[in-house]
Length: 499
Image (cartoon, rainbow, N blue to C red; front, top):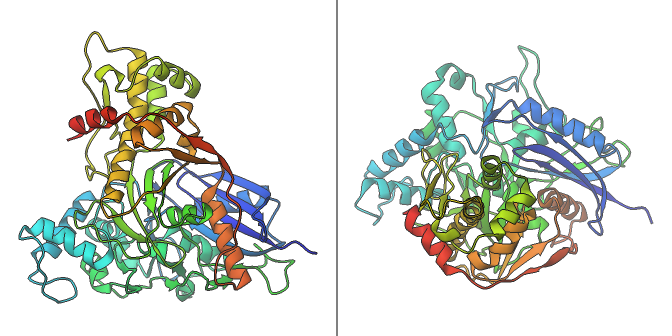
């Protein structure tokens, strides 16, 4: 029997990964990876180059029958009528649009009626009312990460660029479009911008898409950008086909070519790769830190702390996200001049709570809580407790406590957390594994280290290819379950300094 192959593409902040996979079993067949430039903005053409390099490393995609792209959420890609990139994409971790987020919240809060024209009974405080109106409209209040704040920044600061914009899309949308054979055309011609497509999960992170009604909120888009005569990607259902790949890129040896599935945001793709269900919460320690749960109903957090995104299956994915993730450990290593193992060894010489030393790890500002201009700080240091061991322990506990913040916010929406799955590069740390159960207050399941965004994308591709009602039941490999005595005093100490 001929094996059918699918590919999952993960275009993340740091790199593009291509995972060629057996469609029936989920078994890894080939793999490739290529780095992206550093920074909080990026020329999307660098992603295209990285995809081509990663695909070549994976042995090419000529024999792949379907693929899907999972991508970093919120990144703003602007195209002109010729399909050319107008300016470098502003990524999710670019905080320059924080004042624009505040302005849009204030403008919606000051309106006499809600965005849909109806009366509401929200807060009497205009700022809080604005945040609540955004939550009611699109599931999330505005922070600098969301795409809508970035287009507002361009409109306010780069009017010449704003005037050229004919389409707005996201990183995974743009890469799928390029794989389908679209791209820039010559002057005087018009690119096929109508061929852009996306999915609910990624669209729900823009700030101008209502995932409950499954429609763009062009009134909100216009509020931010000043006009609404732009093309936005078609929003596909979980099992719809978006396009057929250019045979020069993928599927040359497959009858009918390689179909391109809807793709999705990286967090939703990771949950699909983990086969998460209701009651599961994933805590992902990558460049960012993310606590995400599966919900059968939309989540509306009127405190504006949890974003009510959609997932890749027709459900929702309420999540809380920190800008600072595993790089907190990197900062600790750099400060102490040690490697990961040495950081863990030092931390093990300390005790829970690091003898009173606490790190508030907002190195690059923060999204949860919403403090874009914050910096990191060490508290509680005395001549007695200022040791390398306590500082190492404080860095590890600060990372975990920031994720406990996210976990508590998700719980606050009524999510009954039955299982925590710890993933991401930061989960490889021996110190993180040792202290996570204590800080989180429950056992932690440790899936085998793998590329779950790429696995989720491949699983979606196999699902669309199969035409079945449910995604294929691929086996999730578990390395084990982490256990430990709860250490509530660590989080309580952190919370006092965090404020």
